[in-house]
Image 1: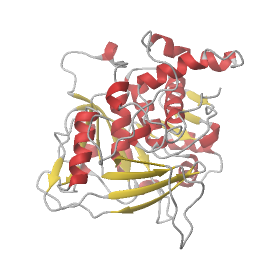
Image 2 (image 1 turned 135 degrees about the vertical axis):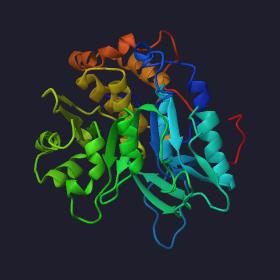
Image 3 (image 1 turned 180 degrees about the horizontal axis):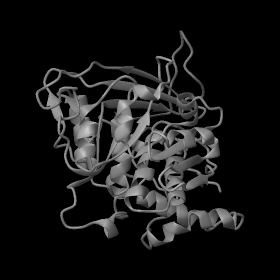
Image 4 (image 1 turned 180 degrees about the vertical axis):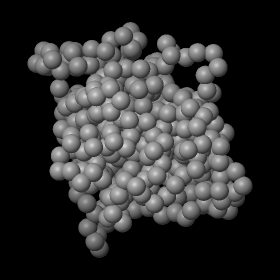
Length: 383
């Protein structure tokens, strides 16, 4: 199944607030009195992302390159926080923000623009915000980042996460080899379901025992290379099965081949192919995939539906530039579903794979393609 093309680079797009008119609460049927105040908690570093788009090629040493488009937005952990919030989850983020204009902009964009709870976050006097410059071209990206670790305080000694995180249905953790994050165990003890991803192991050890917090996790979502290296296997599907010896649910992303998941508790497996898409910028696609999978899990969907939804949201995101800028909401999902149904050549089997969306999406809505304004700190909120 193919995804309809996105808005051409450089075309103004609608604001996230406008996209919010299509409101869906995927957890509506699961909500009960006494539920935790937030659906998902996460912590990490927020960057100011400055994204240059419309480059014909990578910058060449000793020359000046002109980009046809440019945007700025919160990045880093804000990519996943925005993706969760746009899918209707009550999202709480613990992060450090600089007291410079960049930090103020990121705080405002996340709290007022996306509706993310920042009560666990803090502003650090005299600390400047981390910055990433991202250049997108030919479906790839090149990034340059700068930043320093924020100073610790009594409530968040590791610079970001408080010692005792708020009650939440779920939390998303990025595991680091050799590093134990005390908040993960604290959250798990309070009944929070932990979903974890992991980055590249620069040490080259690829030792699962170096990820002690994996023992507190319900699900682990590495990519194929990470999964195979950690398990010493040569097949990502075999790696997923091997990982269930360490975590109940293993989800391995396979790039252009989709994703594969194994639930070690039930023996259930699921495999969903990727959606064909012309990728403009892959920034944040992995974060969007995790957000989609967590959404489906908390909503109680079947494993295959969770994989399909995660893959769909990731596919929609790579058709836009930027990380948090590109995270789709229900307006985008609804518009895509209506649009693909208009093509006679669509594979009926592929359409049935996403038929579960029918019961979720509101009637009406707007036509494809949707357009969101690219936020920038150079203009006011009227964009």
